[in-house]
Amino acid sequence: MIADKFHPRGIERLSELGHEVLSEPSLSAGDLPETLAAKRPEILIVRSTKVTATSFEAAEGLALVIRAGAGVNTIDLEAASRLGIFVANCPGKNAIAVAELTMGLMLALDRRIPDANADLRAGVWNKKKYGTGRGLYGRRLGLVGFGSIAREVATRALAFGMQVRAYSPTLTAERADAYDVEVAPSLDALLGDSDVVSVHVPYRESTRHLIGAPQLALMPEGAVLVHTARGGVVDDRALSEAVAAGRIRAGLDVYEDEPSGGKAEFNLELRKLEGVYGTPHIGASTQQAAEAIAAEAIRIVTSFADRGVVPNTVNLDDHGPARHTLVVRHHDRVGVLASILDALRKHQLNVQDMHNVVFKGAEGAASATIAVENEPSADLLDDIRAHADVLGVDLRTAR
Ligand SMILES: NC(=O)C1=CN([C@@H]2O[C@H](COP(=O)(O)OP(=O)(O)OC[C@H]3O[C@@H](n4cnc5c(N)ncnc54)[C@H](O)[C@@H]3O)[C@@H](O)[C@H]2O)C=CC1
Ligand SMILES: O=C(O)C(=O)COP(=O)(O)O
Image (cartoon, rainbow, N blue to C red; front, side, top):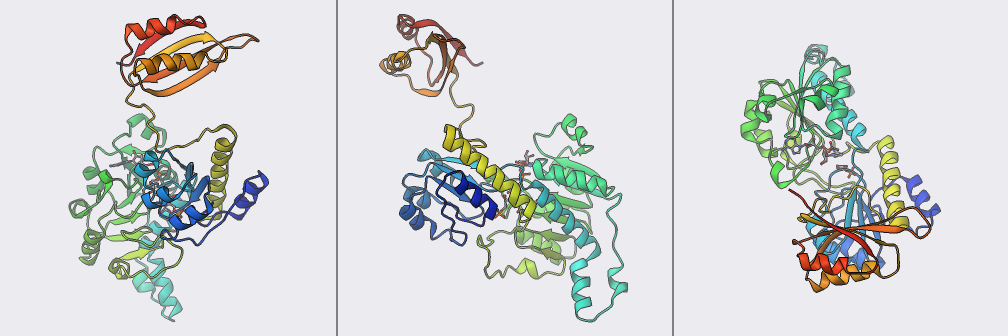
């Protein structure tokens, strides 16, 4: 089931691959639980439509949710994990589109294109007022975050001759160097030393109001803030105050409490300020991005449908709390794995990750790697070793 707008060719392709596709492009988050309960899809594809705990609980048979985009803050990952439902996204596939809009907002702010155009439409020629751009060439751009989108912005800004710096807690000098970008020592240092600040971090508890009143106060007089990341990363009220005071200006694609559907009333005070140019969360809405996202979503569906493997999962415990791993080499015969698991059950050891590989050859051997929650006892290792089909047992413990 696709509960949002999706590339028509993508829908066709899913049908060609033999999937039964139900497209519900105008479904609201409120209608989702009922529709999921009635239609019982195995796979749900969404864009910004919220998938709440109520939706997950109503969706019997649902095994996978694909976010046809990057940000997963609209999906209740806790509920998905509790019910054993995979959630995957399409990382980087709409990054170019967002970077293009970011450059558009930067240029619009510098030359005040929307206001100049509005005046022209009203029959007013005001070269005097609008002939005051600073230009982007040589200006300092500060990127908050240095993931897929920020890197695409960096490439484009460098082509405009901007000096690009970035701050991310995980950004190393080597990585930044590879993109001709400087690393800022801290977020505060970046904000205090940029003509343009562009925000590209995900929304999480830890990034809520990452840019609030104290951070905005660090920005130089006349600087601009471009925010295409996620409503809530910037404190909109504090931004309103800073813009209303005439200190800074802003170009925004995302807002706190923005509508999630395609069309709605939107009366946020911020959008009325002269120093704000806004777009209605269209960062990812280009044909190029829609095609790239659809291709990635189809890749995920195919991998899951054919092999049960979900690429780009965002709610799996990759490293897990497991520190102890058993490596059991055994004859590749029916029932050996069941006997090993039986031994683990007898010793009350919970398996957290398990992987079995087969050696080449007609009557070969196999090796099972089993991560367990607690340290296996010597008795358990002896029990497994005693099995006639077990060739060897090793215990590995992470430091
Ligand atoms: N306006 C729109 O239509 C779109 C908006 N987005 C938003 O943009 C966000 C970023 O997207 P991508 O670049 O693709 O994600 P990404 O995961 O590739 O990059 C995120 C970056 O943020 C950094 N980061 C995390 N916490 C940070 C912090 N406290 N301070 C500084 N850096 C921090 C990470 O280290 C990483 O470099 C998405 O999570 C989504 O919310 C994404 C696509 C479209
Ligand atoms: O990919 C993202 O995180 C986006 O914000 C894009 O949202 P959308 O798919 O256009 O509703």
